[in-house]
Amino acid sequence: MNRGQFRLGIIGCGRWGMNHVRTAYNLFGDKLVSVSDMNPAAAETVRKISPSINFTTDRHEIFGKDEVNAVIIATPAETHYSVARELLLAGKNVLVEKPITLEINDARELVRIASEKNLKLMVGHVLLYHPAVLKLKELVAGGKIGHLQYIYSNRLNFGTVRSEENILWSFAPHDISIIQFLTGSKPDHVYARGAAFLQNNIEDSTITYLSFPGNIHAHIFVSWLHPFKEQRLVVIGDKGMIVFEDSAPVDKLKFYPKGFTAQNGTIQKFDGDFEVIRHAEGQPLAEEQLHFARCVTDDLQPLTDGKHALEVLEVLKLAEKKMKEF
Picture 1 (tube, helix red, strand yellow):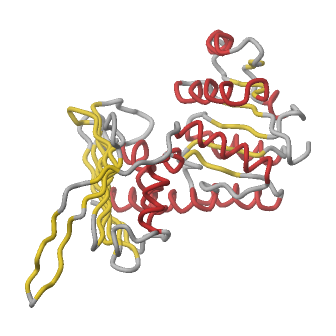
Picture 2 (tube, rainbow, N blue to C red; picture 1 turned 45 degrees about the vertical axis):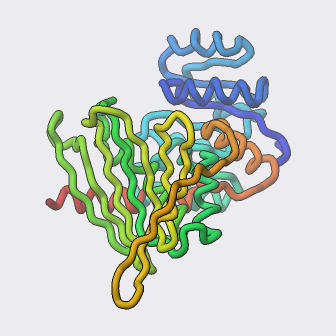
């Protein structure tokens, strides 16, 4: 199949996988060729989206379809490596949900195979396609807040409790990916603590501290034991601060001209009224899928490529190791 064409398959039709199916059909129509899930009951939901979408319980039917050159993987995390590897070896471009894999060496192998076969390997760190996050990156890079100093993130909710992964693996990949995107570097130190209350050895709340070159620091607080939903990222510089509050219904991005300066040997604060930062509209999942399609058809490098996802995985693994040592 020519690079300029895009014919899509989706493997995995759980809750998030079905979001992928709906979004992809709305964006691409009949270019969404086939979807697969082990549960035959998913066929009815797919049919309601469009009867033109072929449904199969055997994912290998998608592997063998020559017309399909791009596949989204929305299966459980423990299957990401095996499914992505089979698809890459079959010559398919791949968008796999986060985390890329559960093991670092497996992720490295996927990156290698994709490179050797000149295929796109993209990972679903969906918030990097949020228009507010892209605007935030532009503002930080443009010096809006001066020298970047500190980032903190709260990603909190009441449930949904998972049994197959702890809160670190469930929530924190979003924030690690955003923080590494904003800093443009890997942390040189990672420290984490967590606590399990509902299930043995499955942490419900964790705090992860990261330090980066240039005296840049960050912390990530995630929990599913919180009375209300909060998704807030605060980015602090020496000339101001930006708050991205994704859980807010409107005005998600705000700039605060607040900070401190040294004058005559004393620390003085400056404190002005906030301004709402306008940004493009768009649904992150739709923007992610459109980016995947452009990468395939125009031979572009994905924003959230295998290398970026590998770096996120390395931080996750190190944070988990530090947490378990306590």
